[in-house]
Image (cartoon, rainbow, N blue to C red; front, side, top):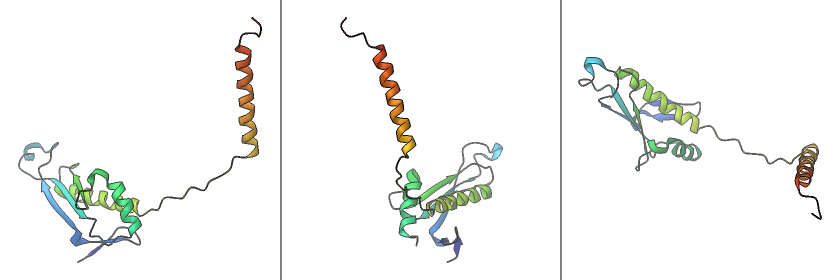
Length: 140
């Protein structure tokens, strides 16, 4: 039961990760139909001991990679080499978790400045005058 560090405060249990190897589409040369070089990495996010806020953001970020039972499924088939695909899948998972660990900044409501209000009103006056000049003269 080894812990894999993802960020400074988050480490995931190695037993929550499982890999399966599938035949990859794309480059492979003569080995394309013989070697299962693509990797499907399954992370049991529902059982992971993650903080609640990180878990909620992870579910949103995972999107279609999230299964009904709460697992994240990542398929890596970018490389011809199985080990490179394994490393790529893990790197993508760790990147996903580290992005979920960053809390979004809360928006602080601001008020418009006096100068910006005046600019807005001046623009409205210019537009109003322009439209007034386009109109037919009164009494025709």
